[in-house]
Image (tube, rainbow, N blue to C red):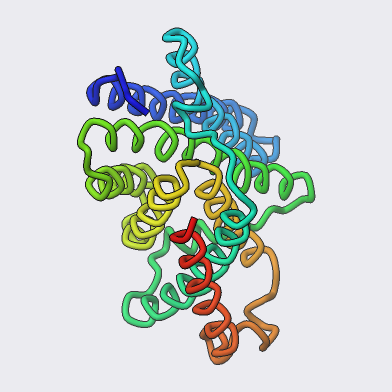
Amino acid sequence: MKSNLSIKTAFVIVLTSLLAAFFSGSIILGIGLSNPESNQQHYTFISFIIGQTFMLIPLIWFLQRKKESFVKRLRLNKITKNELVSTVLLSIGIIIISDEFDRIVQIFVPAPEYILDLNGLLNPETFFGFILLFTAVSVVAPLGEEFLFRGFFQQILEDHWKDVTHAVLVTALFFSIIHMNPYWFIQIYALGIILGFLAWKTNSVIPALILHSLNNTTALLFSVTSIEDNGFYILNGHVSPLFLIVAFMALFFGFKGINRA
């Protein structure tokens, strides 16, 4: 769509949205710390939810004030059945292959302490905690980040620069930086590129939402289950060759379907 918004305005909105997420989440964490007898893990999960929710408020306020179409500006366009199936196949392939890539990387560069602490955080102590974490990781985070980055920001860059590749790469860079995770920077950046490609190719944020949500949900399930010990998916510390074959086939047919669309 033709944009009457400048790149400078888009940058300001993105920055304001990220600051809103940071400060709102920090307030909830502060409330939790002031109540040491409360469940600190619950406060942490709630801070994720509040932060990601508040990330959308500046964007929504701006679009409403400018009387912009939410559907067009956020790429909330419908997708076809073929695009849906292809997106799911592509997501399955990417998730499994990236899992094996992480395992190979850790052979040469072991995960630092803060990554291990993060994995510990993704182990809710209560069922309510799991619901909170699932809501934050699998629902709210993909919605907030995809609407802001792929739906809004990337689309404006595409329109102004007339260069999809440049727009996708820059958006993915911002997406990687805001996660503040140097160890996984390359993986997050690569994921951001794929998410940007999906949003551009289908002219919809929905495929990117699906991949993002499935990726986060899989990471969450891996952290709360004993999949590492079942000898079915994991073989000698690596993804089973059978699953890798399935992953590459899913990646091939998913990518082919998206390109056909």
